[in-house]
Every structure is written in C-alpha cells, then in structure tokens.
Image 1 (cartoon, rainbow, N blue to C red):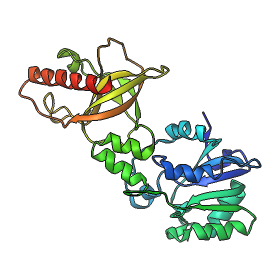
Image 2 (cartoon, rainbow, N blue to C red):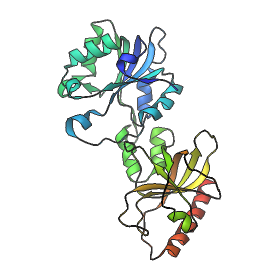
Image 3 (cartoon, rainbow, N blue to C red):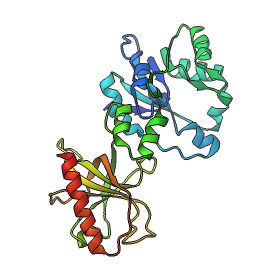
Image 4 (cartoon, rainbow, N blue to C red):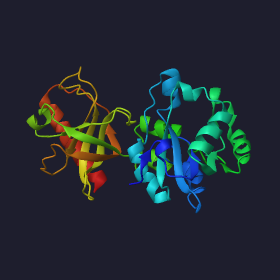
Length: 303
C-alpha cells in the first residue's frame, strides 16, 4: 500500500495532483494521470484533511473514500504517495501566494502540479487554476489545468455520486465511479436478536466519516478481510423499527447459506441493489418471513 503521510513526511521532490478526489471518478483520474509519468519527481496526490468546510462552517463532510481506502485506489494509477495537508484556520488565512510558495514549492518541492479547471484555493478561495499556474511558473514548476469531464447528463462530480447513493441507486453510483461502491466495518457484538428469529447478523461498526447509501435493505456482497472470494448477503442499513423503534441507525449483515463465526473480523461490503425501505412489522414472525423473501430476492440478484 502506498504511504499516507503529512507534507513534512513526504518523499521529495514531487509531481503532485492537487484536489479532494472524493469518489475518484474518471474526471479525477484524468487530473492524476497527468503527473504519474514524471521521471524526475515522485507522483503524489495532495488533499486537505479534514475538509475545509468542516473547519470554516462546522459542516459534517462525510467521505465517499476515506484516506486509507483511497491509497488502495491510487496505487494502481501509478501514484507513489498520498499527502494530507492538515487544514485549520491558520491555513485558511494563507494567501494564494503564500500557500503556493511555502507549501507546494518549498515544503513539497513540487516540480509539476496538476489540477482541475474548477480548482480554488487560498484565503476566501481567492486563487484559481490560473493563479496557481502564474505563481508556480515563477519558480519553474509546470502546471497542468485539466478541463472538467462531462457526460450526457452533465459534469462528472462527487455530488452526482452522493445523489445516486442518497437514492439507493448503486448502479448509477457504480457507473459514475467506474467501480463498485464499498465500505468497511469491524464486526462488533450485538444483542443476538437476529439469531433469535433465525437470521443471525454481523453488526458492523463503520467509521463515522464514511458516506453511506440510503437507509433500507440491500442485496450485497461481503468479503472477510484477507479473503478474495465474496459471500452473498442481505444487509439492513438503519434502525430496527419492529424490534426497537428508538434504536440508532446500524449496519447488519447476514451471510446467505453460510455458518461462519465472524466475531472480531472485518468485513468489506458492496451493496448491490436496494430491495426495499425499512418497515415495521406486526410481530417477529412477520419480520422473519419478510427477511426470507429478501434473502430469495438477493440470491436471484447475486447469483
């Protein structure tokens, strides 16, 4: 796995692609590919962490790709390191000139820089891609400004991926990202309620910064950490309206036709199709019968 590091820990000099690259879609890949063929500098992706809007406006910004996930996506592209610039209010006050000269050129020793055409930076977002090019060129660094990629529905963007996931449309999200949406979680001890009605589930503890799809019941694939073959599964994402209507949202996964002890393991989950929204049933017997129908639907979809 490529290293995940701070600017002061980075290997130098760098050829860097600068941006959030959340969702890592085809438009992002075009920006990154510009720097991966450099031979005199280390191909590097540079992002801010946390998201600037979290610091400046107190907004929760859930990520399509957490940094650790992103390293596995960047490595096949030829990127050698992922550098996260710690974003705080002091950084937010830097002028575009100081940001470029102190961080990109001095600390990261950038020999070439690639950004999307809509890139903004510096205090009050005063700098744009042309500002970056003019400042970097004064020190001999090359800057590539990559046009925004569009398809028949508009520009490629992380917002479109989030919108698809908010609708539970995994097919659209997969088309936009060029890969399946997945998330990971540690299996933690639950109350055993699923086992009590004949449908034992693994309860997942998912990083709270991860963007999850619309609440509901899904046909899914599940990988146990360290294994390459997936299992067919049914996943419930959300509270438990029949068992405990006041319970918080949770992720519960049942492996179909398997009896595996998943305690103290980690699972990677690919929701494939949203089968239905959550429902409150009159009793546990009715809930068990619906889960049986969900399992049959999932088997048909995943076979």
